[in-house]
Amino acid sequence: MTFSLVARSPDGRLHGVVVASKFLSVGAVVPAAEAEVGALATQANANLAYRPQGLTLLRTGVAAADAVAGLVTADPGREHRQLGVVAATGPGASWTGPACHPWAGGQAGDGWAAQGNILTGPEVVDALRDAWLGGSALPFAERMIAALRAGDEAGGDRRGRQSAALLVVQRGGGYGGGSDVLVDLRVDDHPDPVTELGRLLAVHTLLFSRPDPATLLDLTGAVADEVAALLTALGHPVADDGPEAALVSWAGVENLEERLVPGRIDPVVLTHLRGVAPHVPAPRSGS
Image (tube, rainbow, N blue to C red; front, top):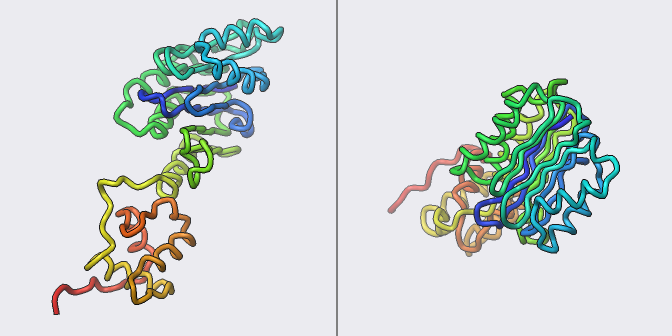
Protein backbone atom coordinates (compact mmCIF):
# COMPACT_ATOMS: atom_id res chain seq x y z
CA MET A 1 0.00 0.00 0.00
CA THR A 2 3.04 2.22 0.17
CA PHE A 3 6.39 3.26 -1.26
CA SER A 4 9.13 4.70 0.90
CA LEU A 5 12.77 5.61 1.22
CA VAL A 6 14.83 5.44 4.41
CA ALA A 7 18.17 7.20 4.23
CA ARG A 8 21.19 8.60 6.05
CA SER A 9 23.20 11.69 5.14
CA PRO A 10 26.81 11.12 4.01
CA ASP A 11 28.15 12.53 7.28
CA GLY A 12 25.80 10.36 9.37
CA ARG A 13 24.25 13.35 11.16
CA LEU A 14 20.82 13.08 9.53
CA HIS A 15 18.46 10.14 9.23
CA GLY A 16 15.07 10.21 7.58
CA VAL A 17 12.04 8.50 6.11
CA VAL A 18 9.86 9.72 3.26
CA VAL A 19 6.73 7.84 2.27
CA ALA A 20 3.55 8.05 0.16
CA SER A 21 0.49 5.84 -0.07
CA LYS A 22 -3.17 5.41 -0.95
CA PHE A 23 -3.77 5.21 2.78
CA LEU A 24 -5.05 7.75 5.28
CA SER A 25 -2.29 9.45 7.31
CA VAL A 26 0.57 7.18 6.29
CA GLY A 27 2.93 9.29 8.39
CA ALA A 28 1.20 8.07 11.54
CA VAL A 29 2.08 4.46 10.73
CA VAL A 30 5.20 3.95 8.65
CA PRO A 31 8.19 6.07 9.78
CA ALA A 32 10.46 5.97 12.81
CA ALA A 33 13.90 7.49 13.31
CA GLU A 34 16.39 8.38 16.02
CA ALA A 35 19.24 10.84 15.63
CA GLU A 36 22.62 9.23 14.93
CA VAL A 37 21.02 5.80 15.46
CA GLY A 38 18.98 5.01 12.36
CA ALA A 39 15.61 5.06 10.62
CA LEU A 40 13.04 2.54 9.49
CA ALA A 41 9.80 2.21 7.54
CA THR A 42 7.26 -0.49 8.38
CA GLN A 43 4.58 -1.02 5.74
CA ALA A 44 2.34 -3.44 3.81
CA ASN A 45 0.55 -5.13 6.73
CA ALA A 46 2.55 -2.81 8.96
CA ASN A 47 3.78 -4.04 12.31
CA LEU A 48 4.00 -0.90 14.44
CA ALA A 49 6.00 -2.77 17.06
CA TYR A 50 8.87 -2.79 14.56
CA ARG A 51 9.38 0.92 15.21
CA PRO A 52 10.47 0.84 18.89
CA GLN A 53 11.96 -2.64 18.57
CA GLY A 54 13.96 -1.71 15.49
CA LEU A 55 15.34 1.49 17.01
CA THR A 56 16.30 -0.46 20.14
CA LEU A 57 18.28 -2.89 18.02
CA LEU A 58 19.96 -0.10 16.08
CA ARG A 59 20.81 1.70 19.32
CA THR A 60 22.94 -1.29 20.31
CA GLY A 61 25.00 -0.89 17.15
CA VAL A 62 23.67 -3.79 15.06
CA ALA A 63 23.78 -3.45 11.28
CA ALA A 64 20.64 -2.69 9.29
CA ALA A 65 20.49 -6.19 7.81
CA ASP A 66 20.77 -7.74 11.26
CA ALA A 67 18.01 -5.49 12.59
CA VAL A 68 15.75 -6.56 9.72
CA ALA A 69 16.58 -10.22 10.31
CA GLY A 70 15.90 -9.92 14.02
CA LEU A 71 12.54 -8.24 13.53
CA VAL A 72 11.12 -10.49 10.82
CA THR A 73 12.44 -13.77 12.26
CA ALA A 74 10.53 -13.15 15.49
CA ASP A 75 7.33 -12.11 13.67
CA PRO A 76 4.82 -14.82 12.68
CA GLY A 77 3.23 -12.32 10.28
CA ARG A 78 6.47 -11.63 8.43
CA GLU A 79 5.22 -12.92 5.08
CA HIS A 80 2.81 -9.98 4.97
CA ARG A 81 5.32 -7.33 6.13
CA GLN A 82 7.57 -4.90 4.34
CA LEU A 83 10.44 -3.14 6.07
CA GLY A 84 13.30 -0.79 5.22
CA VAL A 85 16.10 0.08 7.65
CA VAL A 86 19.24 2.21 7.75
CA ALA A 87 21.65 2.23 10.69
CA ALA A 88 24.23 4.76 11.86
CA THR A 89 26.73 3.34 9.38
CA GLY A 90 26.86 0.83 6.55
CA PRO A 91 24.38 -0.31 3.92
CA GLY A 92 20.64 -0.21 4.34
CA ALA A 93 18.43 -3.30 4.22
CA SER A 94 14.95 -4.07 2.91
CA TRP A 95 12.54 -6.95 3.49
CA THR A 96 9.48 -7.81 1.41
CA GLY A 97 7.38 -10.74 2.58
CA PRO A 98 6.23 -13.12 -0.16
CA ALA A 99 2.56 -12.52 0.71
CA CYS A 100 2.70 -8.75 0.08
CA HIS A 101 0.35 -7.57 -2.67
CA PRO A 102 2.12 -7.16 -6.01
CA TRP A 103 4.03 -5.43 -7.32
CA ALA A 104 6.18 -5.50 -4.20
CA GLY A 105 9.92 -5.32 -3.67
CA GLY A 106 12.85 -3.29 -2.45
CA GLN A 107 16.47 -2.34 -3.01
CA ALA A 108 19.21 -1.08 -0.71
CA GLY A 109 22.66 0.45 -0.84
CA ASP A 110 25.09 2.41 1.28
CA GLY A 111 22.97 4.51 3.64
CA TRP A 112 19.59 3.93 1.97
CA ALA A 113 16.78 1.46 1.35
CA ALA A 114 13.80 1.88 -1.00
CA GLN A 115 10.73 -0.35 -1.00
CA GLY A 116 7.09 -0.49 -1.98
CA ASN A 117 4.05 -2.69 -2.39
CA ILE A 118 0.86 -2.52 -4.47
CA LEU A 119 2.94 -0.51 -6.94
CA THR A 120 2.52 -0.09 -10.68
CA GLY A 121 5.78 -2.00 -11.06
CA PRO A 122 9.48 -2.20 -10.20
CA GLU A 123 10.08 1.10 -12.00
CA VAL A 124 8.80 2.91 -8.90
CA VAL A 125 11.59 1.58 -6.68
CA ASP A 126 14.09 2.12 -9.51
CA ALA A 127 13.02 5.76 -9.67
CA LEU A 128 13.33 6.19 -5.90
CA ARG A 129 16.84 4.74 -6.06
CA ASP A 130 17.99 6.75 -9.07
CA ALA A 131 16.66 10.08 -7.76
CA TRP A 132 18.22 9.50 -4.35
CA LEU A 133 21.61 8.57 -5.77
CA GLY A 134 21.50 11.41 -8.30
CA GLY A 135 20.41 14.08 -5.82
CA SER A 136 23.55 14.45 -3.72
CA ALA A 137 23.78 18.20 -4.45
CA LEU A 138 20.43 18.83 -2.74
CA PRO A 139 19.89 19.44 0.98
CA PHE A 140 18.98 16.19 2.71
CA ALA A 141 15.23 16.79 3.17
CA GLU A 142 14.82 18.16 -0.37
CA ARG A 143 16.74 15.18 -1.71
CA MET A 144 14.30 12.82 0.01
CA ILE A 145 11.29 14.68 -1.40
CA ALA A 146 12.87 14.58 -4.87
CA ALA A 147 13.21 10.80 -4.59
CA LEU A 148 9.60 10.42 -3.47
CA ARG A 149 8.43 12.64 -6.33
CA ALA A 150 10.34 10.48 -8.79
CA GLY A 151 8.67 7.36 -7.46
CA ASP A 152 5.27 9.02 -7.66
CA GLU A 153 5.87 10.14 -11.24
CA ALA A 154 7.01 6.63 -12.17
CA GLY A 155 3.59 5.27 -11.17
CA GLY A 156 3.61 5.04 -7.38
CA ASP A 157 0.81 3.21 -5.61
CA ARG A 158 -1.31 1.55 -8.30
CA ARG A 159 -4.50 2.36 -6.36
CA GLY A 160 -3.88 6.12 -6.49
CA ARG A 161 -2.76 8.87 -4.11
CA GLN A 162 -3.87 9.94 -0.63
CA SER A 163 -1.14 10.76 1.88
CA ALA A 164 2.58 11.40 2.26
CA ALA A 165 5.03 12.19 5.06
CA LEU A 166 8.61 13.21 5.76
CA LEU A 167 10.49 12.61 9.02
CA VAL A 168 14.09 13.82 9.47
CA VAL A 169 16.08 13.72 12.71
CA GLN A 170 19.34 15.40 13.71
CA ARG A 171 20.93 15.76 17.14
CA GLY A 172 19.66 19.08 18.54
CA GLY A 173 18.08 19.95 15.21
CA GLY A 174 14.53 20.53 16.45
CA TYR A 175 12.82 23.81 17.24
CA GLY A 176 14.94 25.84 19.63
CA GLY A 177 17.43 22.99 19.84
CA GLY A 178 15.15 21.27 22.32
CA SER A 179 14.60 18.05 20.36
CA ASP A 180 16.16 15.97 17.61
CA VAL A 181 13.16 16.18 15.25
CA LEU A 182 14.37 18.42 12.45
CA VAL A 183 11.40 17.89 10.10
CA ASP A 184 8.09 16.12 10.79
CA LEU A 185 5.59 16.91 8.03
CA ARG A 186 2.46 14.99 7.10
CA VAL A 187 -0.16 15.29 4.39
CA ASP A 188 -2.92 13.06 5.69
CA ASP A 189 -5.57 13.22 2.92
CA HIS A 190 -4.94 15.09 -0.34
CA PRO A 191 -5.41 14.48 -4.08
CA ASP A 192 -1.72 15.26 -4.74
CA PRO A 193 0.05 14.56 -1.45
CA VAL A 194 3.63 14.45 -2.73
CA THR A 195 3.36 17.91 -4.28
CA GLU A 196 1.71 19.22 -1.13
CA LEU A 197 4.48 17.68 0.99
CA GLY A 198 7.03 19.54 -1.11
CA ARG A 199 5.15 22.79 -0.56
CA LEU A 200 5.10 22.23 3.20
CA LEU A 201 8.84 21.54 3.21
CA ALA A 202 9.44 24.88 1.45
CA VAL A 203 7.42 26.67 4.13
CA HIS A 204 9.24 24.76 6.87
CA THR A 205 12.59 25.73 5.35
CA LEU A 206 11.60 29.41 5.28
CA LEU A 207 10.40 29.47 8.87
CA PHE A 208 12.62 27.06 10.75
CA SER A 209 15.94 26.61 8.97
CA ARG A 210 18.92 28.13 10.74
CA PRO A 211 20.59 30.93 8.75
CA ASP A 212 23.78 30.46 6.78
CA PRO A 213 26.43 32.40 8.75
CA ALA A 214 28.22 33.35 5.52
CA THR A 215 25.20 35.31 4.29
CA LEU A 216 24.32 37.29 7.45
CA LEU A 217 24.20 41.09 7.21
CA ASP A 218 25.31 43.42 10.01
CA LEU A 219 22.32 45.23 11.49
CA THR A 220 23.99 48.63 11.15
CA GLY A 221 24.04 51.61 8.80
CA ALA A 222 21.73 51.53 5.81
CA VAL A 223 20.56 48.00 6.61
CA ALA A 224 19.49 49.04 10.10
CA ASP A 225 17.79 52.16 8.73
CA GLU A 226 15.80 50.12 6.21
CA VAL A 227 14.81 47.50 8.77
CA ALA A 228 13.70 50.23 11.18
CA ALA A 229 11.54 51.88 8.52
CA LEU A 230 9.95 48.58 7.52
CA LEU A 231 9.21 47.57 11.11
CA THR A 232 7.75 50.99 11.90
CA ALA A 233 5.46 50.68 8.87
CA LEU A 234 4.29 47.33 10.23
CA GLY A 235 3.45 48.80 13.63
CA HIS A 236 6.52 47.61 15.54
CA PRO A 237 8.03 50.74 17.11
CA VAL A 238 11.80 51.00 16.96
CA ALA A 239 13.76 52.18 20.01
CA ASP A 240 16.47 54.82 19.88
CA ASP A 241 19.19 52.19 20.30
CA GLY A 242 18.26 50.45 17.04
CA PRO A 243 15.76 48.05 15.46
CA GLU A 244 16.85 44.78 17.06
CA ALA A 245 14.18 44.59 19.79
CA ALA A 246 11.45 45.47 17.29
CA LEU A 247 12.85 42.87 14.87
CA VAL A 248 12.68 40.19 17.57
CA SER A 249 9.07 41.17 18.32
CA TRP A 250 8.04 41.08 14.66
CA ALA A 251 9.90 37.84 13.93
CA GLY A 252 8.09 36.14 16.80
CA VAL A 253 4.75 37.10 15.28
CA GLU A 254 5.88 35.83 11.86
CA ASN A 255 7.31 32.56 13.28
CA LEU A 256 10.79 33.46 12.04
CA GLU A 257 12.52 33.42 15.42
CA GLU A 258 14.72 30.46 14.49
CA ARG A 259 16.41 32.68 11.88
CA LEU A 260 17.41 35.46 14.30
CA VAL A 261 21.06 36.19 15.13
CA PRO A 262 21.94 39.00 17.59
CA GLY A 263 23.33 42.07 15.87
CA ARG A 264 22.79 40.67 12.40
CA ILE A 265 19.95 39.83 10.01
CA ASP A 266 19.41 36.84 7.78
CA PRO A 267 18.80 37.92 4.14
CA VAL A 268 15.85 35.50 4.07
CA VAL A 269 14.29 37.44 6.98
CA LEU A 270 15.00 40.77 5.30
CA THR A 271 13.41 39.60 2.03
CA HIS A 272 10.32 38.44 3.90
CA LEU A 273 10.16 41.72 5.82
CA ARG A 274 10.32 43.69 2.58
CA GLY A 275 7.57 41.53 1.13
CA VAL A 276 5.06 41.99 3.92
CA ALA A 277 5.68 45.65 4.82
CA PRO A 278 3.85 48.52 3.14
CA HIS A 279 6.00 50.26 0.54
CA VAL A 280 8.75 52.19 2.26
CA PRO A 281 11.21 54.30 0.24
CA ALA A 282 14.77 53.07 0.57
CA PRO A 283 16.75 55.28 2.99
CA ARG A 284 19.04 57.79 1.30
CA SER A 285 22.75 57.69 1.95
CA GLY A 286 24.54 60.90 2.92
CA SER A 287 22.82 64.16 3.86
